[in-house]
Image (cartoon, rainbow, N blue to C red; front, side, top):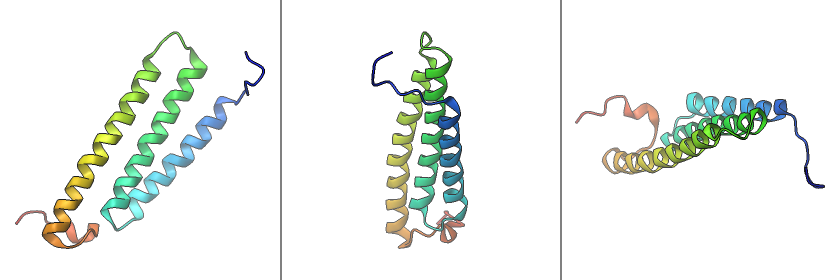
Length: 108
């Protein structure tokens, strides 16, 4: 270990991840605009990625599965945001609103 290594317990990472997850779930359930719902989903995915990185660092570094899954989650989150924002732009052009309540029926 280097002179500048700071030992942070695993519980600290898990608490931060749980708080981020709770904030993301609140954003998904309480917000009315579709963009904020997408941002909530992104925060939830980042909380899961933080948990995987923390567990990978504390359980063992010989196995790369935690790193692989974290990179996979970040990639899926980026794709989700790109597709979601594209859909929101399309829906805004058709309905002139981004309020989630106005999208009850997407047909016609």
